[in-house]
Amino acid sequence: MARFGSFREFYPFYLSEHRNRTCRRLHVLGSAAAQLCLLAALLSGRWPWALAALGCGYGFAWAGHLFFEKNRPATFSHPLYSFVGDWVMFAAVLRGRLPF
Image (cartoon, rainbow, N blue to C red; front, side):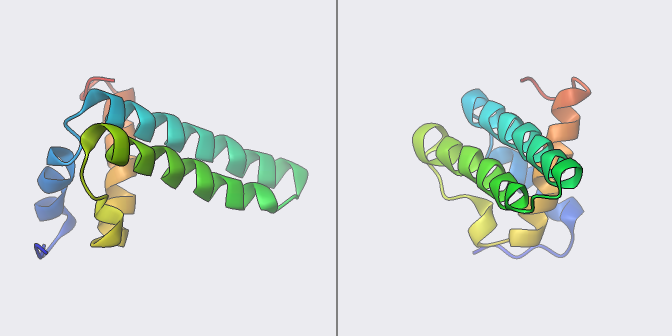
């Protein structure tokens, strides 16, 4: 397991684990669905939506790794950096800096 001293060191590794376009797309869709679930939780006061947010975010991403990227999600070895990396990658896709 590689060790990283900072997120700046980790992020290039994170991107290398997301070369497959379909995997990246599933990450973006899962992140967007997670945001919608969180919004539903806030607006409705029904907190099971927050659990659905976790299911959407991680479910879509892990499916992308299992079926398309064919690697082990970084969540298991670097959970915090991986979580942050997902949102940085999400923003990069929305800004057009990474292909969707």
